[in-house]
Length: 243
Length: 210
Image: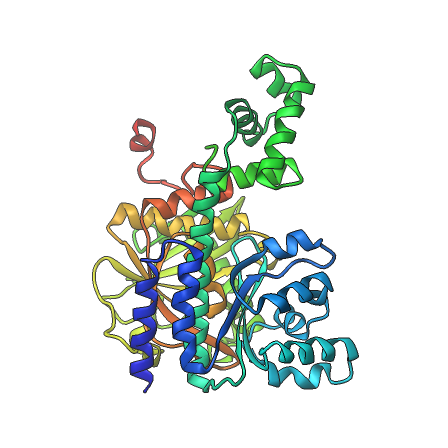
């Protein structure tokens, strides 16, 4: 049994190499997750407390979740009430939703989130915490009307989740790198910033005013979806837009 | 800077190796509670700390802030002798495969919920630099599956050798992780520098020429 499920897991991991985008990864995952009774998959970076809805949604990496429920979930800010999310933040172990029931038994709002999820065919679920390279915590869930996950299969699911998530992030990076287009001046300004130059020094190098530098940097920050200069530099390096 | 310590140069690193063994004891015995490894002199040393081991020390000033050990897969190592149950598949053996063990970083120099700390990055970069220069392309790792995603994101090509298992109070999975130049570039991007992390005390002339 163990040998066979291990071999199937390795086969899944090898097949992932052929996926061309996160949607394909999701498809492969769903056909694998069926054996556990799961019909839905959702995985993403857990937002830090207080971030807006836009950012919550952009953290989602794999998405095959009942749409109506997602809409309700994000518009009501359930993510900050969801006991599965709270547990992912605190623990490094995977869990069945039924196992965390004692934790939220007395929390009315948390109970409501779980009960409502059940109304959207998410009656039973299994969630796996993951740690990303950026130091974020990610959660990976499968769910359906009825789940069947043996102790050994927890290990299988942890591996499936890790590789599917990892592959999707890498594919997403590639997509982003080809869609984000910096102008040569924006790239130049960022490149100097990456080398530790001040705005004034960058202006000197580029032969423009500090104000001009600021303009290029601001627009680069916007395109990269970052708020600070340091974050923009890190993101541009990661996407290999600068060296 | 990462210093590689082997039988050839260990006489130059006596004090640092002593610090490394003490760091190992603090992290693995006192912090992680691997009590089997406890030693009354506070230096964690096991049967694999022999002439075949390659020690990598992150040294700043004269302080050892991070450590890891590489063991050849062609000699006894953890996966062959201590945790064989983690390997469902045929055990990987070869000159180009080494086992990565005892990775540890001083608490004050860890991630604290952000990206790889500079010490952690340097240790990983050290493996890749050393591997690319010495014909090693793959490492065997036993680790908590929680950290597996990070390796995938760093462009290590990892394949599990078995399913995760509970050992003590932690889940552990054995994997092989292959790396190449892309892995090195990714680590360099992460730290924003492309200088070598490995110190080369024996070949200063070649270094200048290269």
